[in-house]
Length: 177
Ligand SMILES: [Zn+2]
Ligand SMILES: [Zn+2]
Image 1: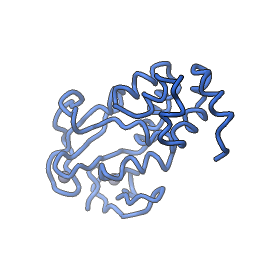
Image 2 (image 1 turned 60 degrees about the horizontal axis):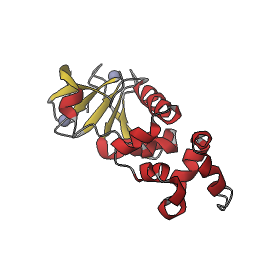
Image 3 (image 1 turned 180 degrees about the horizontal axis):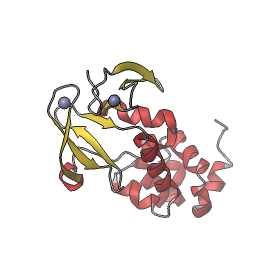
Image 4 (image 1 turned 135 degrees about the horizontal axis):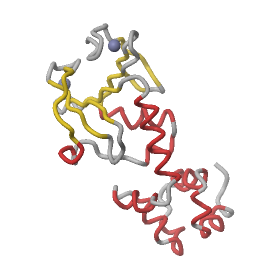
């Protein structure tokens, strides 16, 4: 496959345990949607739980057809905003592939980490229908709702605990991970 930006041959490599096709010349990455969450998780495990759906709300976030061509199928890539951010990435709707130019993955990680640090994390989790939303909004019944200890530990790690004091009482009773 050729780089959609500079035309160089892409090379397959393992990045964070995920197969990506990378351009040795310009640093662009081609990654399939099914691998994208793992690629993010390899950089920051917590952001795996923040999962903006690029595909079901594509009309909402689409800017338009771009000039670049999909390295896999040759269709025009579409420019879309990544969730509610101002980061513009290119995607192929047919291949469900994501084209990232150098630095864009870093921006996405920073954006997702910003959500975690932000007051609206509960609303965000609710909006993506995540089980952690229930975990945060019903904190009196929290032990019954902890389906995934890892989620809780990550929330604690990100100091969300300071806004949800009940979590600290629960956390003190949890075994170390
Ligand atoms: Zn390139
Ligand atoms: Zn394609």
